[in-house]
Image 1 (cartoon, chains in turn blue, cyan, red):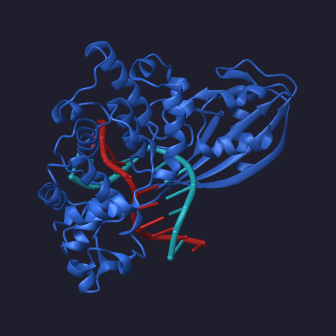
Image 2 (tube, rainbow, N blue to C red; image 1 turned 90 degrees about the vertical axis):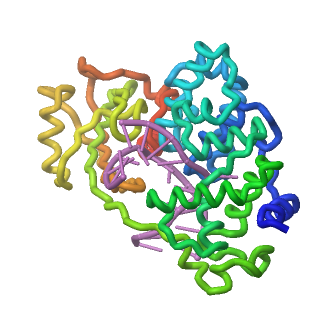
Image 3 (tube, rainbow, N blue to C red; image 1 turned 180 degrees about the horizontal axis):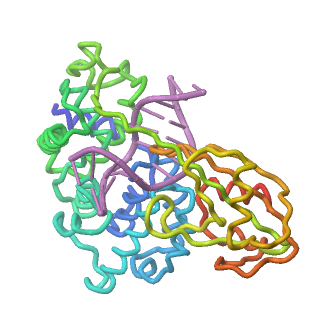
Length: 345
DNA sequence: CAGCCGTGGTG
DNA sequence: TCACCAAGGCT
């Protein structure tokens, strides 16, 4: 019994029934893999179902509007994935006769597709012998073989790539890849792995040396910085202003309320003059109805967000998109803004 | 290549 | 509570 045999045998008895495992359609497999990047199955599943329904094939996706795609992607995070997916769909539709590339090199060349996703698509859709190396694989291999190289170092990544490829069952790459990831996801978990029922524990270096909790090793901690965002909900009873974010920084291409960003965490009283200086409220009478605060934590930022709910007699002329309050949910908003608007309207 | 890019679950 | 981190990739 190889480690792959054990994993596949375990998988046969423990696999979840997931929709992208019941198809050989490269488009649907690609869609699922993009959605699942840095995303839990439970979180990505409803998005996959919605996308597969709205865009059952690559042609349909290639003709979609960016706003439509971003609206479907709303709440999933890492919004560049959605834009890269559109770019790739259009490229394949327009320059490759709509035919999804069927070899590793060409799959890897697609925008938004890196080594992991290329190996996943190549093996699941085309049965090609490429080992996936994701967070699960890092964890399983580092524990089973007792590898102490940091998984986020160049040296470590290279080492685990080679090791994963060596362990791969080249006769059954698709099943092997599904099995090793499912095993890592359900049994060999980051915390409290179920070593008591693990079929590999006898020969697992980390288990035998009681170092399960110490592996895999990850170096460096990223520093979390603060940002201070002041969003203005300007409302005349019928309409509000919104705008589309640009394609730099967070929340690329999503919509937001008129924004003032400050370098420091200044008080509400000190923000009011800034609001009054803003083009949309210059020389206007307005009433500040309510201020709400929320700290929105990203992986690498703490966003200190304040919403200023301002009532005004008549919407001024301004370089914003004026929409009906009742239509607010037609637009893709970042999660904190979506939650705020959802509590208002 | 180190920093950037979301959201939500977990212990 | 809070650090960790999940089927990573881009620049």
